[in-house]
Amino acid sequence: MEAAIILDYLKLLRENNNRGWFQANKPRYSNARNGFEKVVSTLIKGVYSFDKNIGFLEPKDCIFRINRDVRFSVDKSPYKTNFGTFIAKGGKNGGRAGYYLHLEPGECFVSGGIYMPDAATLKAIRSEIHYDPEGFLEVINHTQFIKTFGELSAEDKLKKGPKDFPADFVYMDLLKYRSYFVIKMFPDKEVTAKGFLEMAIRNFEIIQPLVTYLNNAIENSEKG
Image (tube, rainbow, N blue to C red; front, side, top):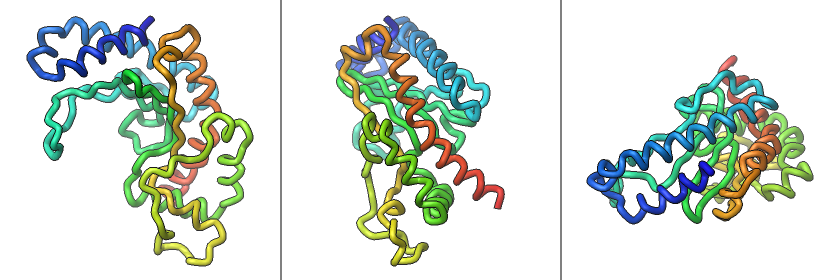
C-alpha cells in the first residue's frame, strides 16, 4: 500500500517538478514521505535481525532528502523523483557499506555495498582484498549471491589496475572497482505487490557478507 502511494506521488512530481506545484501539494508529499518512513522502519528491523552492526537507527538517519543539489548541475529541477534509503552503521552519511532501496517509477531497485567511497576508504578496501583475495572471492562467488545479483556493478571500473598495488597481483581485476556494490531491478508491479518488503529484506541478507567484508576492511584500516 505504501509503495503504491509513493510511486503515484513520484509520477506526479516527475510531471510537475517545480516549487510551486510541490508547495501546493505538500500534503501529498507528506503522505508519501510518511509511507516511506514506514517502509524504512520495516527494513531497518529486518536488517537488524541479521546484521546487528548497523546499530540502532531511525528512518530519518537513513532517508535521503528529496531536494536536489543543483549548484553544479545543468538540470535545475529542484526535486529528486525518487525516494532512497541507505541502511548502514552511522546512517546514510556514516561512510560504511550498507543496504540501499530506491523507489522511482520504472526504476526501482535493491542494492548494497559501498558506492563511490572517498580515496582513503577505497584504498582500505583494495588493501584488504589484496591481503585476502580468497575471502572476497568466497563472498562474491557464493551460489546464492550470483543467482540473485550476478556480478558486482562495473560502473566506473578502471581499465588498468591502481598504481598502489603490485602489477603482477593475480587478482588485479578485483582492485579495479571504484565502487563495490550489487544491484537488482524490480518492476513497479512487484514493488507494489504484497510481500515485497520481505523479499527486499531477503535480498539484503544475501548482500550481508559483502557488507561485512567491506566494513571490516574499513574498520581495520581505521585501527591502523
